[in-house]
Amino acid sequence: MFNSNVSRRNFLGLTAGAAGAAALAACGSSGPSDKGGSSSSGGKAVATYWSLSGVPGEPIRQAAIDRFNKANSDGKITPFFYQNDAYKQKIKTAIGAGQGPTMIWGWGGGTLKEYVKSGQVEDLTSWLSQNAAVKDKILPSSFGAGTVDGKVYALPVETVQPIVLFYNKKVFDQVGVKPPTSYNEMVALIPQFKAKGIAPFSLAGQSRWTNMMWLEFMLDRNAGSEVFNNVFAGKPNAWSDPAVLDMLTKIQSLVDQGAFQKGFSSTTADSNADQALLYTGKAAMMVHGSWSYGIQKDKGGNFVKDGGLGWMNFPPIEGGKGDPSNTVGNPGQYLSISSKATPEAKAAAQKFFSTTLVDDDEKAGWVKSGGVPVLKGADSLFTGDDAQFLKDMASIAQNAKSFAQSWDQALSPVAAETLLNNIAKLFQKQISPQAWVDSMNGVIGK
Image (cartoon, rainbow, N blue to C red; front, top):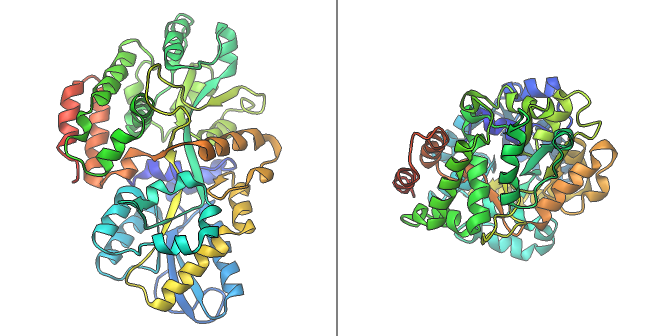
C-alpha cells in the first residue's frame, strides 16, 4: 500500500540525518514538467523515466541516467522526478490513459499485477533469458515482487530492505539473558523483562503496517511462503489455511501476555516513538525493517556507536514448516517498460537495464547512500562503522530461500486497506481470528 509510511520504509538510509528525514516527509521537491523532448545531457530524447524525487534516491538515479546518456548519443533518456504523492497519482492516471513513461518505477507486487492485467507493461522473461548475465548480477530473491504468474514484468533495482529482530544488548545484559534462538525462547523472555519494568517488545501499533511485520514472519515461520503466495495468486479462501488461524491466535496470545509496551496501539512509527523505546532501554526488542538502523544511529546518541544495538533474522518457530532463512520486507524497487512505448524507446530502456543499472558505479552509489544493493558482490564495499550491519543485511537477502514482499505492497489497494484495518483490530482484540479470516477471504482477488 502506498502511503507515507512506505516512503519511510523505502528511503531512510543509514546516512539519513535530520535533513534526510525532512526530505522523506516531503519526498523531495516538485518534479519538473514532463513536457519537452530533450534529455538533460543534450541530444535527442528517446526514452522517458519517471521516479521519485528527494534524497538519497534522486541523485543516484540522475547519476545513472547521466552515465547512460554520456555513453549513448543515439538513445538518450529523459528523467522526471516527482514527490511521492504526486507520483502515485500521476503515474496511475498516465498509464490508464496510455500515456505513461517508457520506464515505470514502482514497488512491484499488487500495483504491478494490475498493470499486467491491463496489458500496460512488457513481459521481460524472454529478454532476461537472452541476457542471462544481467539476471545473474541481481539477487535471485529480489525477483519475486517483479514476477506475475511466473513471468518477470519488472527488473529489480536499487536496494533490499529485510525486516529483522532488533534488540538492546545492554538491556539483555542487565536482565542476564541471551538473545533467543527460537520462538519459544523469545516468548520465555517476556515475563523476565516485564519483571524488571522493561517492555519486551516495542511496537508502533497505531501505524498498522508495523503490526503487519509480526504476522508476516509468524505465518512464514509456521507454514512457509506457500500460504501467502496462494493469497497473492487469488486462490479462493486462501486465508482459511489452519496455519493462519494458528498465527492469529499466537498474536493475540502475545498481546494477552503483555509482550508490547503499554499503550502500544497509540504509538506511531512516524514519530519514531517505537525506535526511542529501544535505544533508551525502555524496550528490549523490536521487529522492524533494516532502515531502523539509520534511525537508531541518528536519534540514539552513542547507542549504536557503543555497540548497544543487536540484530538477527526472526527466529524459527518450533515445528514450523517455514525455512528459517526466509525473510520479508522490501526485496527491491522495480522498473518496468511500458508496452505502449515505441520500439526505439523500448530498446533504449533495455540497454539501460543491461548496462548502467548493473554497473559498478550503480552498486557503489547505493552503498554510499547507506543501502544494500540488489546487485551481487557489494560486500567488498561495506566499510567503516556500518560494515557489519550491511554485511549481515546482505547475507539475509542473499541467503533467503524466500524474500517475501510486505503484504500491504503485494496486495491490491482494496485488499491492503482491509488487511491493515483487520490487523489493527486483531492487536486490539476487537476481532476474533476466525472473523479476521472470513473478512480477508472476502477481498481475495479484489
